[in-house]
Image (cartoon, rainbow, N blue to C red):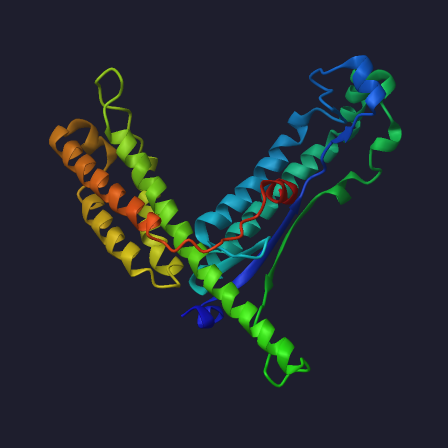
Length: 300
């Protein structure tokens, strides 16, 4: 199954960038001025609130991919099941429009933000810190990438070919482990949240239930077949159990006002959560490479 994964999916590379809007302070400035809202080891070139909406959209895009695709061992690449390509393409196009709308809103106030910074920074203000064409500091783009095993008849010497073949097969096994782990952990998180909300609060009263709790779980259940490209039968069995429980719940309001239903669903989900946690623990402990937090932040 792992060796044929690219017959059922493709790779996507999303690149987003946002002007940092800050610059490291010289040591003399830190000694003299210390920290403030605008000076914390670096100086803010504009109020961070101006850039926050753009960064939020970058994070939304990555969360969107995480929700509808699967992780891949190589940094910045995401494994997209073929049934999800159209949905992801359309979703990224919508986020792209949102992103550039927010960039346009920022560029309109860029000069005003510079003047505001000049008043706040005083002698630390430098014209050269500010790009002349600020729009060039932003990017939101994606592309589809093809990775395949080199053909045996390629120009590679036999020893290099065998080495690359071994690396490719190893990467496919790692991809399988990553994808299965990601789906099991996502499912565990959704079930865990539901168990928590169905429990009583510290005051002994039922907690507030929102429709999004059931909707998020139903969305995962509905998309699982498309994302289960490695055929995780154990998780499929647990998901079928979850579907049987959720089908009893027409709305969160039924759980709120029907104490017997709430108790039954809570007990079933608690039992299911234990099984999902066990399924995660039983996964082989292969060394899995994940992007460093700094890499994710830099990309966003």
